[in-house]
Amino acid sequence: MTTSLKSTFDSTFGLNISTWFFAGVLCCFMIPVAWVRNFAKFSFTFIAGNVLILLVILMLSAQSFAQIYSSGIATEIEVVKPQGLLPMIGFVIYAFEGIGVVMPIMSQAQEPDQFLRMLVSAIVTLTGIYIVFGSICYLAFGDSLMIIVTEMMPPGLISSSVKVLFCVNLIFSYSIIIHPTNAIIEGWLFKDMKSR
Figure (cartoon, one colour):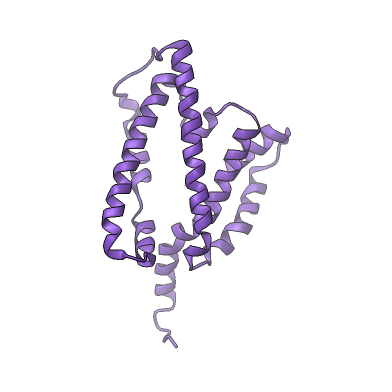
């Protein structure tokens, strides 16, 4: 997140601010957010984050289709790249890792008995989006495709705004991500305290 903020601010405003500055600023925001226990307070940011993700997918898909239309399918396409298998496994684990996020959401769901159906639907939909979006981008750009997909967006105010808004969304979603860690540490530190 610090690198993304630094590159966005440096390219947009022509600055060269230290990464440590952005790390410090993010800590000032993320530490208080980590103390929030009621995830409903950030529900608007989760919705805004989903809208942002959809916006980026649509923008990059349009850019990819335009690239395919003007230049054709990239020539350096390989079905399987042996040197990319280990990073791919890491990305897959990261993309579908969610037990730390799923359990807190399920505990706050209005209808927990419907949660499994919703979770399966979400995973199937997400998998389909990953496959279609990744394939379109790879067919358009081939080996020149960047790991961080927002770096493929054309430079400008829209792309800079989207990158900054993604970072803001990550800050507000941090509370739900860090909740299981907080619960484990608090349970271990305060196990002998009696609840009042």
